[in-house]
Amino acid sequence: MAKCLLNTFLLFVLVHINIATCQTLTGSNPLPPGANFDLNAWKLQTLDADLKFIEKTPFELETGYTSPFFYSDSTDGSMVFRVPSNGSSTANSSYPRVELRQVLDGANWSLSDQTEHYLTAEYKVISVAQPKPGIIIGQIHGYEDESELLKLRWTGYKPGQCYIEARFELNDATRAEYGVTLATGLSLGDLVSYTITMKAGKITIWLNGVSATQTYTTAYFGTTDTYYFKAGAYLQYNGSNPVYYGKTQFYKLSLAKQPQTISFNSLTTKKTGDPDFNPGAVASSGLAVSYSSSNTAVATIVGGNVHIEGSGSTLITASQAGNLFYNAAADVSRTLTVTQAPAGVDDTREGNGHFQLYPNPASDQIVIRFYLSEESKVSAILYDLTGRLVKIVIPEANQMPGEQKLMFSISDLDDGVYFVCIKNGNKSQTEKVIVSRQE
Image 1 (cartoon, rainbow, N blue to C red):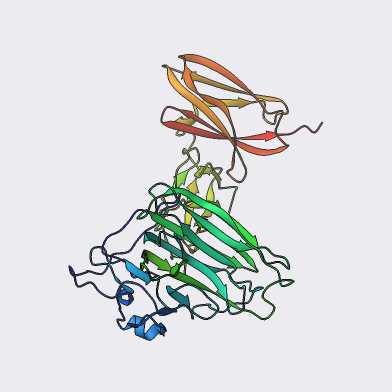
Image 2: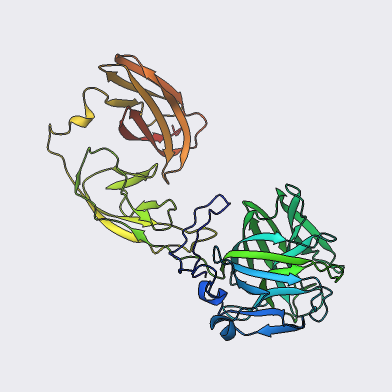
């Protein structure tokens, strides 16, 4: 999990991310990467002063290791990987790298492991080797030959002409490598975000909102191998005349989804006939909260709101299932008490804006009858018992004063219980309807 950075950047995907308060950096003397990022699950594969391949342990990274090839950017605190094209390569490789390799927190999992292994990152590619402008910025790797189940490769250096591929291997005897393009039209310095998961041999990668998958089986992979994540700068070129540098900067790197919690205040007592209301729970992630009711004779959930059915008490439970970046939140429940409204007090059911639905039960069509004292916008939406929107039965439109009747068809609906939420300006009324074709 990233301890974070001095500056925050907008995540370029269709989800919301919270980045915690960052450590303070000091001008041209920034903190080392191990102070800005949690690196205790990684070792570093890098180069020494003689450009020979070396490795640095998690302890060395956490206690301040830096070099000309691995350091923090002095302006924004990002973690910089800088690899020269004349550096030494690792065994069974032709190209130099400065790259983190996962060694803890679930590393070395089997192909059939049922645990979801997870990596998310935000980064920029700053430079590549122009003769062969490719650089690997994320991998799922094993110990054996041809064990790169996934390589996330950037290609290009010309503005607006760079692209990113997920490089997989075919799940057959050939193990031939192939690419799936995830992003095009990029330029060096663009901020990119990716998330990689692997579970039971299935790898999924999301990059800037685009995804690709590949499933590997033990018929061709992983009978004796285990796997781990890598991230950094793995240059796809070697040469010394001239020397080129591949450079990437990481702004986020995490092996775990972020936690989230739900804030849910106590619910005030309601009475029968009260209008639908939003319970008001909020997830710390900013993701939408869903609700359920333990006693549907007292209250149901319609369109995300609580609909009063009768007197009594029920537990309203708020849930948030998580997404690519957040774990599921713990459910939070609050008691809702509904009292019986005294006779003659419930004026929300009569007079201006009160709606009647008939016939009910119905088999073919339903009439909505109502009276308006002045021109007003009216709409009606149909939900099922789970609160799922089925269809808009009356599109929002101005209705004239006086008594009105609007009709809608239910011939396309299965038999069952539904709810019609009717809106009149800023007021709403929800009614239960039963579709039944039994004789």
